[in-house]
Image 1 (cartoon, helix red, strand yellow):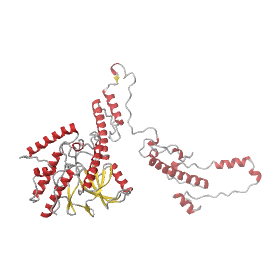
Image 2 (cartoon, rainbow, N blue to C red; image 1 turned 180 degrees about the vertical axis):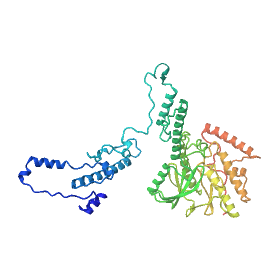
Image 3 (spheres, rainbow, N blue to C red; image 1 turned 90 degrees about the vertical axis):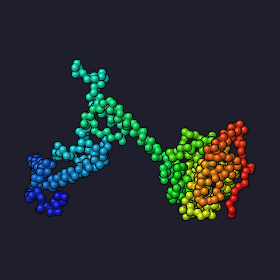
Image 4 (cartoon, one colour; image 1 turned 60 degrees about the vertical axis):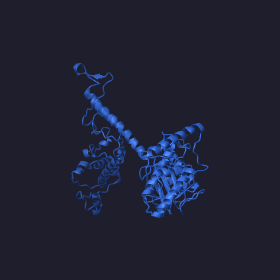
Length: 503
């Protein structure tokens, strides 16, 4: 800002000292045209002192009586500031990039400026050679050795190979921090280099596996990006108004609450649930035994494709719920199925899900009513729907509006399944044990309940003996199915009478 003060103070207050005013005498036209006067004027124009940048930096004061000199000094100072700003912008533009762009052509260079630059003004990134970069190891010629006699050095020399191995570490993946081995003159043996190389590849593969697992699997209370995109599409299509949050998690799925929207061909309830089946089989690895022998999906089952199994699992629950709804069994109503996301009606009220039968506080009369409802639904499920729940317990039954609702029927199978009676006996054992502990005196034991639901008349003094008869029966039925194509015991046309509650 010193040159601003110059004009502020005026000509009489020059910072370079007092100015001398030359009196120019008038001359005739003849004198002007003379060569002697022209030479004199030329000598006077060359008599201006040369102010270099070094002199200005030293702070030397010069007297000047010429506006031209002031203008040159001001322009030189302005150009220096411009060049400094240009270097700053150049560093900011290039950053840490190995390929840099030079702004050298835009600098202001003056003939009276000193040719030598100070060391702090030189940017080593503008030069082709990096002074901080270590020298690369010498390359062995094609003949494979250097030197003669005792001083011969082959390509297998320990020092040469060590330096080459250190230089090869620059080819590792960017996420592997190898450091400045060349600068330290580090020499790696072949064994160490091969170990580091193998470790680098292993880390890359492990990182890829973790990324794949993160992107394509659903975790507890979370969904992968592909599932999240399907959920967003449902909201954008108007099927759902919004998705509120997770209300339940299990070994096979994650359940979210949502507000229903509208569809053209199907009514959407005000409150819905999204059952997102997990795309990882870590917690439920034995899904195949429930689906591979089901004739509805036997041609489409592939154990080598887990994502296909998940979609079949969701489709299986949709078909089972449709059968149960047709038979009048209280269960969620299916709205729509999108790959491994099943949208159903919400069992509950005002965002509060109905309690499980295990958690419901029921009196003796309600517990008795619930028992008869469960037995009646098991008979309907086996005889009318031609299904076996295969995972029936107090945790998969809800208590809502004074009645029991069945949920989680994705693993339900048909009675012609090779292990259907084993699963049915397990359901009967869970139901009988729960209601007997609940104080229902009319509750049958597991053997009686199995015979009532299945219509068979098996007997046994112990559970092992009873299971042995069931296995023998299943073996006989399996052989009969292979010979005749149908099961010996078929109760689709009739069966034992259905049990109803007292009401």
